[in-house]
Image 1 (cartoon, rainbow, N blue to C red):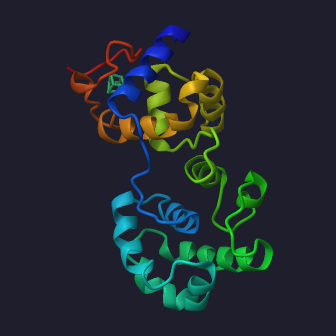
Image 2 (cartoon, rainbow, N blue to C red):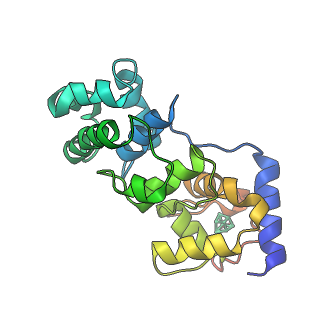
Length: 210
Ligand code: SF4
């Protein structure tokens, strides 16, 4: 895909949704961190349902750590992998208290050192909370980048690097949200809705649906 097409794609995505953001509900960087840890292999809707009950009771490293794994579980048990996520969240809260004055760090290395936080989660936090132009490649973005021809790659890291290289700078900060939303609602896994896709004429996918 050439530069002109890429520019046109993001221009259109921006026009349709000038201020995109995550669908996770949060009121602080710490709440966002907890929500993102819970969202691995789970829907944002399911996470929001759980955190709507958890956050009014505990929404700081101290209060969640005080719940302990057993106290946290009832709030998150509807979410997949809740046992390991609960364990990681408690360990992350303890580390934030001991090493970061109860603040979520803004550095990739420090974020990735937190239990349950990998490269993708760190990218979401750096982008959404700290406004850094990172690219968190999830299953939706991986599919969209390959199908459209925007940034083809065999691995998540290859797609992340290709997107960072090819997306025009002016769109980089919001690109992550636009691509997730495109993949979640239009360029869906099984039957992409090419007929109602606003970038259909710019997309290189050869097997477009009607
Ligand atoms: S035209 Fe189809 S394949 Fe291309 S981005 Fe849109 S929905 Fe996906």
